[in-house]
Image 1 (cartoon, one colour):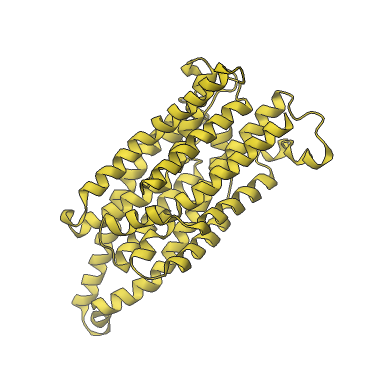
Image 2: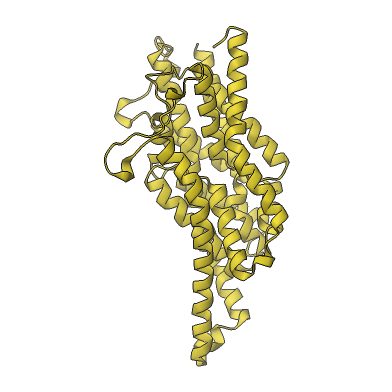
Length: 372
């Protein structure tokens, strides 16, 4: 049983590594597209800021570990977690190969829901749809923590991207009208130079927000797996070297070694890069300049930071992609390449059911061979 526990933890870290290189584009596509940083420099910036961001709170991890699946209805066994992870990994690798910026968050959550449904013999009560804890900021369940943000975060990204872009243009126009020194600073050459520097800050902000939101999802999965293993008695009689696997009740199931491991592995995955998706986000949707990159990154990072504060596992991919779309739309609707956007949107729509279906099928196969 110890081997199975370690296999699940290892598979979770594999998912985290893939999440790192799959979603690297979320942090650096715009800063590469605007040529503010070289790809190598941008990846190093993203890796460092992702690492720092991963240590910044555990609200999202707690949502994944205890707010989506009702353990009173379904036994969240190690096999369930393994199938959930494999469903997310397979879908992530497929979309990476196709160069599509799909959501690792929704792949993981979809996999967890699919595997839990299979284990519960299609009892939809195994999923926590809505649970009122207090005021609306504390509500739990798929409706509040996943489905609602799944719709609102892309809308917010698109809208905030437009607002940021229009606001910056209004500021520059006001400076040009004022004349004098302000008028000279409003010239394109000075605007590009300023936002070329400012985009370093917005890219770092995006990296921090990405690490804070995405790294925590795998932390929650590992914590959920270990709590399930403990309740099943799989962690009894562990050898001394494996005692770190025993959950510490004082840390709400998110132990320090889980946080450190996920942070380091995600940073390593980020450093490995994800060039196919970087090309799609940074070059294929719309032509970007430093001011556009600054607006898109700032908009997306703000959404992610707010969502992480409320424990919402929001898709980093959706927020940055729609922020880029909003910025492009503010330029001109004709500036957007709608055929590319259509492919991206289809990947978003299919991610949750595809990863869930894969996890469901994998668990069904395990039951078929008698290992569930």
